[in-house]
Image (tube, rainbow, N blue to C red; front, side, top):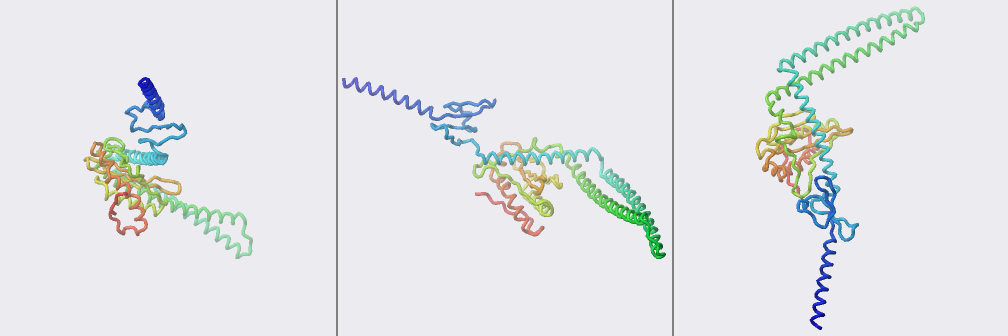
Amino acid sequence: MHATNSLRFFVLGLSAAGILWGLGARAETYRWTDEQGNVHYSDQLPPEQAKKPREKFSQQPWKKELQEGEKSAEQLARERQLKELRAQQERLLQEQRDSDLSLLRTYRSEDDLLAALQGKLQMMDSQVKLTESNQKRQEEILSRDQQRAADLERQGHPIPKNLLYSIETTRREKTKLQDQIKKLEGDKQAITQRFTKDIERFKALQLRQKDLSQAPGSRGQLLAEDKSGREGIIISAVACSIGAVCDKAWVLSKAYVRDHATTPLITETEKILQTANPAEDGDIALTVSRIAGKGEDILFLDVRCRSSSLGEELCRGDKVRDIRAGFKSFIEAGLTRPLGEDLGAAPVKSAP
């Protein structure tokens, strides 16, 4: 009898344990989305989902826990911000590539550019001379009408309204022509400056046409995220007021690129600073873009490493991470000093 009772309690114990084990197994439910976009719920998590974003629900269905691989709202926001900055940067790079290709297709040599510049300046000189001739004619009309008005006044006669109107209209026309001449002279200076930059860019492109064919974002470029787990994604961006402050920040950006990139600077415009694509596993290439805003510009730095296992490891390592982290502090510190003072590389410290 005693043995029978013991056996009965043993069986009941096993049954209870099985029930409790089943309840325990159902206490956690996972939710994940597969590569086809299908949503799954299960108490068993597939191995391939172990390090991917998913949700786990405990016995209280209202309590959702953050799992390994799942991103917080702050991380998602930073990823969106980084994606937007890179999209703006790629737009500027594409515009520069289009401009470079147009320059190479339009002109065959530096002499062609100089000839085009002289042609434009001669045409504008002709416009200036024509405007000056019209201005001289208006001055003669104004002088004649003013003399006529003075004679009538000396004789004690009233000055006719149409004469007063002619004097006022001629004065306005004379002023308008003076403004046109100033504008034409300003346009001549702007065209000369633009062609001077185009000539320098053309000479650089002739030396580096192979670099032009390597479009950023394709082979040779790796925009790796920081996977160290210490601070997550680092966004190397600095906001600056439009004008002299941002111009100074741009000069500082160029100094930072020269000091931290291992590849030579191949593009230097008012909106893009870009070094050559990485050729070796240890190369670090940098791009800084000046993204225009309504009240301020954003200077955004990004890093490119060689598309290889060692290059990827470099781009995810502490050295590149410190370059990203040091950009903002270098620019902000430089803005507090007179331009040209201590413009060399500031040591980039590892973030804690």
